[in-house]
Length: 328
Image 1: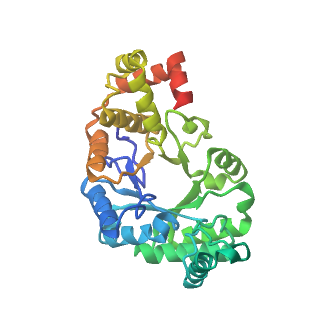
Image 2 (image 1 turned 135 degrees about the horizontal axis):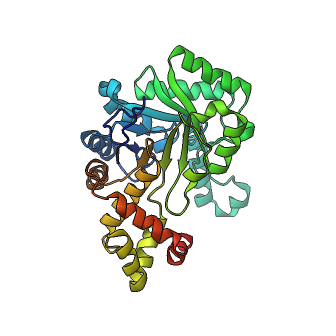
Image 3 (image 1 turned 60 degrees about the vertical axis):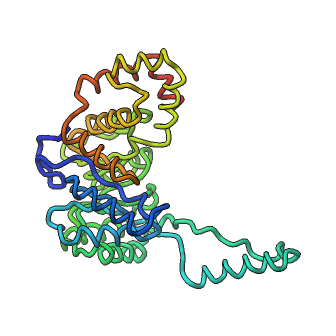
């Protein structure tokens, strides 16, 4: 599953799986999150994806703690444009006070502001905000340069000459090596068409249910990162195959993978994602170290062969497969 074509972000022989840090600190302690990143490093992963907002603003700090000593052997991609939820002391005090008042004086509830749920803040692409985000990322990651800086969930109106000039300036100074987009496929196509300079690095969701990679413009020298090969739909797919023995039999005959084996099923979808993005990186995340080891083993050993990928594509193009893709 490894590309033989050299790439500045994925050297020859490197595992094309990248570890996504979006799940760090979500139901995980700081120590548990550190352990997951450490496991990914031990498995040979060299590409790490993060963002200013991930882990409630703490994911970059975790990566910085573990990757700074290996910086010359690691590729770090981070994003700017979305800020973590505002957890400042004034906001927390205001919410706590409103909650207490509502509890102690319920008759006043209609006159008391509703406590605000902490939500990420989108659309921070103005020069000052964007620059502050980049500077924070550099500090948290404990590095003086970022390999790839991506515009996070941006739309066409977010991109202006001031922002593009700043990105060019960062690259000229060596603060970043490359920049690009990390947004939805429709916005990616619109922005890439209007601003080809952002075409070099594109990060999109891609899986058997939505093969968005086929919609990207031709970019001979471009670098593509895909994610979400295993979404919540994976469980729906597994349940669907377990409820329909005839469908499960056709799946197994086409892919040579027993659909009742969830681990093997996940490995097949990871292998399919790697095959669909030759030369690019495929992001994944797991909160279990054993799953990280299993996924990296798929990329290293090629335990899923090309004939199985072809079989899966053939199944998906059939009427039964189309139904699976639609219902998944």
